[in-house]
Image (cartoon, rainbow, N blue to C red; front, side):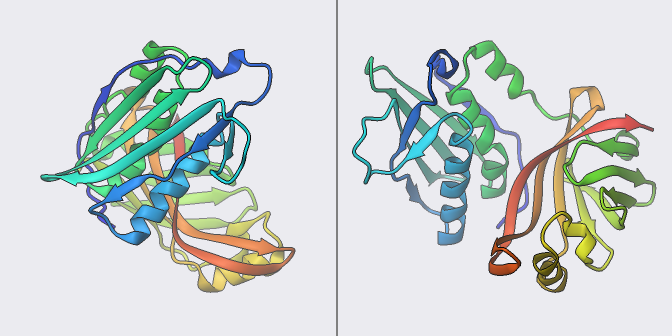
Amino acid sequence: MKKRFFILVLSIVFFSFPLSAQGTEPTIHLLDLFIQGIGAEESRLIESLIRSYLSDFGEVISSTETQIPDYTLTGSVYLERDSFIFMLEISKTVTGENASFTMTSKSIGELVLKARSLVETAFAVEPERAILQESQPLDLKEAAVLGTWRGEPGIEMIRLQRMGQGLAIFSSGVQMALAWIIEDNILKIRQVSPNTERYYYPLPYGVARQLAADAEPILWELRLYDNGNALRGLKILTGVHYEEEVVTELIPKEMQNIEWTRSGR
């Protein structure tokens, strides 16, 4: 998957779907996405991310279920010239009202990075709030990222130092050496220390042990926001499915949206 990100152009037809006004969790029928011009792995990743993000707003139901959904959502991802077009269409069953939301990106990596924002925009109560969520990233310089950052679950502190060096201190007490560079206005951080079970606390020991043996080094790809006080982007790691202490599946290059906030220089 390409890792080069470019400026996002977001074109939105604003429409309000106030989910919180309903007394119970709404149901969302996610139709199959139309995806063309990208690989099967990227297609599965995008569909999985959209389903995961939608679950924050209601119960996602499949086409095999018979209940009438509160909302129906479909979308498409396709390559047009040198850009990837990502479109979501949402329909409110009771009123028949429809709205469409489109974003254009220069790479699949950028599309994945901004997919959550598009889903949040589609379900935003107030268009003004959606505009704020799409603020442009700031220019990245070494001085802008040096210092202490916090906010990621399982990690107490991230310290970024000069010469591309860094350190993460986990909630389990273990430390991880980091290396970082700035490339295409993206802060790219990678795990340097060898894996240890304590990086995966509080997973069961047997699961953490297998991850320590088989997982790829953790990567972060972040952009700078909020007057230099927030880093937001993707954490790329080996995901896992397990039952009790038995690993049933390792998921390479699983992506998580994360945010770090500045704690000190």
